[in-house]
Image 1 (spheres, helix red, strand yellow):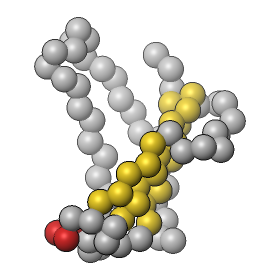
Image 2 (cartoon, rainbow, N blue to C red):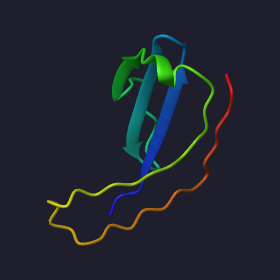
Image 3 (cartoon, rainbow, N blue to C red):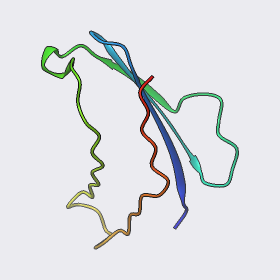
Image 4 (cartoon, one colour):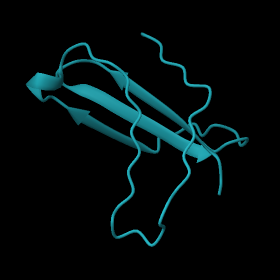
Length: 77
């Protein structure tokens, strides 16, 4: 039932670096990134768009999960 804040940063090309921070909303944003990865897949190295998708595994004991998105901001570097 916690509300979470998420910051995703995508930079560079070939490879592209993706970094994400996740923390409990209302708490200070952590200085360190929660996870970082890179990808140099040629078909993914161009301009794109933003899409939010949710997923719950069929093996999850939860029958349903409520997800809301609020205060979404997407900016070019």
